[in-house]
Image (tube, rainbow, N blue to C red):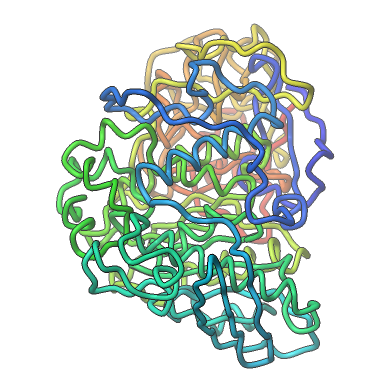
Length: 563
């Protein structure tokens, strides 16, 4: 395994799988990224010059569409290609899911004070105004700021204690609930007409974009337009998700328990027991665009899904918080969306910029949960204050754990940094592993992760053993999975509990075979969020390998070198 540092995205984040397979999965490259400036843009949408189109037909597809595939069937091959691919996905999302989110109006003016933001908009002879309240943290500004949709999202006390201001945004002033689709009300519809096919979520997103416009114009003495975040819970979680997806000036998006019409994949909701049906979410409020009504009974004909809305946020910061204890919220489908979107983060070399957490004990809807406090603080510090590492963690509850491999037939490409070569068709199978691979060496023991004996049967345990260079101590990291080249099988855990033993098993793409390499030496299992661990802090030959809670300060039996 070859490790190097990619400086295209400046150093800071490492947590969630800084290891990526490149060059046909023959090598593993550790990538670090800056949270903040390198991921946001100075404009609301940097893809306005991209040529986009709408498909001529909508064939049924029960699997998640390939986010890397262009409409002409070719796949993107460089990171630079993602800009226009995102623009194409955005066009599909507006046409079929959310409705049109117009660009900046002809005139946007307003004021920013330490307690309030006023917004005045004029376009094509129509005018509307709205405002938002501000609470500053202690200290000296200008401050980063988090828009709290409906005043109801991530814990505002924690946000301010971390050093960011909060902006309490009333989305109903911009797009009112309780109105029929042919007579929508609020500032957005005053400007664009009450019969607009745009749903409330896109209207709310438009409102936040206008707030950012005003902050930009204010001179930045109180709030920083280049360090903006957004959060919301429940219906306002749906809004936060859309807001972050549609404005690239937002550095950190934090949707909470968004449910149907938010994060969960549309294709998964009909099969998830107890989840709010798409038809119910569509009719409850005009959240989604009018066009989405054609897909509530058959989402398989949609040319996109919400994993691609997640991807629209990449490479910017995203921290998704879900509740697996309320079936209505469709957290299993939400986990699949996050895992699918994370593949775009992976391909861009910034997998650490996305976090997901549904492993919570309290089932109360929109509660302020202690499990989320630390990753929330870390996210604010990394993406808004730019002085720390993002949490970069996936903690998926076993109550609602989705399996991405059941929802895709595409593989994550190795996007290059160079100019775009001629497009190539999507691969239909996993890339071949390296014929040699590298070693995973315990820092405490100096011994290698070893497949026990000559056996390659599923369930064969892994252990520590003197490093010999033999095939049963060789591993390549391919699309997040550690693959033994000789057997073609993967490092696997069949559960999420502390003490679950690590074994060899047929590769299936599931969360039990997905691993993230951290720069502190930890190797973390995606599904459980727990660390690769030598049992009993053992160092002797034959010590079995398990997963166990990661020790915050670092512990040598959970630290590994990839050689």
